[in-house]
Length: 141
Image 1 (cartoon, one colour):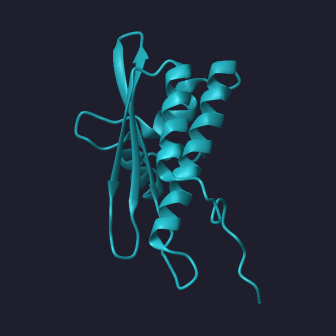
Image 2 (tube, rainbow, N blue to C red):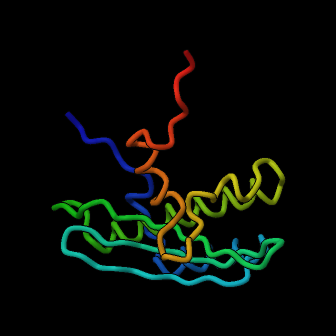
Image 3 (cartoon, rainbow, N blue to C red):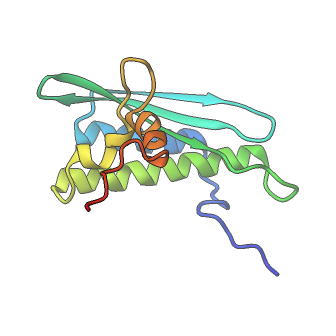
């Protein structure tokens, strides 16, 4: 049985070019700044984008992370990192365009990725609560 291809797995676009695409898209959409970060591991790496977004009451920090798929005999760690940065670049660019166009409000797209004062994201705080049923609405009787 053949293995299915994952998105961007054969990209030849260097990570720096994907980061440049991200910066350009964020600047065009109105972000106030961007930061790129990587954590390298033996099996997988973490690719992180943090950007500052203006709002009515000041600024918010939005953080997106992509954990690379594991390298295997066919695909190297470096290729997996290029793949992750491509995915982040296209995700951000398309969603920022949707928000700029007015199709979906920016906050609705990125709400789970807003960074809280404790360094966690809103999603990493609330999703476990939802999964445990602590934020579920009671059933109607």
